[in-house]
Length: 395
Image 1 (cartoon, helix red, strand yellow):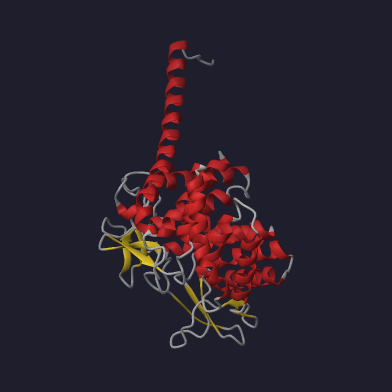
Image 2: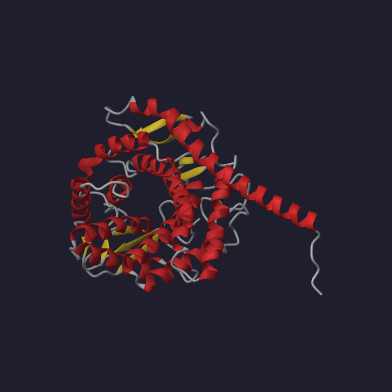
């Protein structure tokens, strides 16, 4: 026999549920508001460097804001964050600022000596094209894709990451999956499939050689340029050659999700799901879902967390949730929501006027090199705000 709740109890339940929902909405709005206040407060300090060689805020060192120039691999994340703030607030000042800093990267389109031009240009010019039409921005995307394509080694089937002849012949890092978005974008603009074919070749070869049986990824795979033979598998920023560097796992998740978006090839979706399951079910993942800097690092209070890895994963999970069945969709959205909720908590979210204007605390650049450990990082902010945008679209 079914038991009906008394009317007063039913009303109490409904009121509590509505209150909880309202509080969650208020928390999210406050996160966006705080992010805007942080970047607004810091803007005058940042714009004072606008004509200097180093003008893009990247992180802090000894609690002092550290700037980098256009040719730093992180240079696209600051204008990208300004575009994300425009998307979240609809305030035109963020668009004006985003345009200013985006167009300071125009020379990158001709740079052939770095695989990270995809990060630099897709996060700046590519982000801008989401909110306006611009033939000039299209041209920058295509010209940069041409520059990136010069690093493709056809016999090995990969885009070379670094020039590091003393240690590696043709090193390819898992991070490089993120630069493929630029190539896909160039094909969409031009209709020229050459960029698409390079991107899929790199993605296919990376699936073949970068992943272990448990679906974790090596950081660096070194190739013979002429034969495509794998010479060695290492790490550069992880705990060890056989460990799972946290941000690297997030790069892989995001990279294969975008590959599926652009190709609709099920093997990329399958790989993205495998990586998502590795991250979600890892026994060393802390309860708040913000990973240690390496999944094999000690589970201890003094082991640094990496908010940037969490933000990248959350953004990727929201997109991945749109390509899977309903059960997995609910699972991945719930997982991403849990990450965002943690990153929006006082433990990771900076108070107004602190953190040199950055939004998130507790990220890690390279622990083995003792560089940027437990500091804010501009790419953590970029992917955190992108996650909020994607969360809103799902709602």
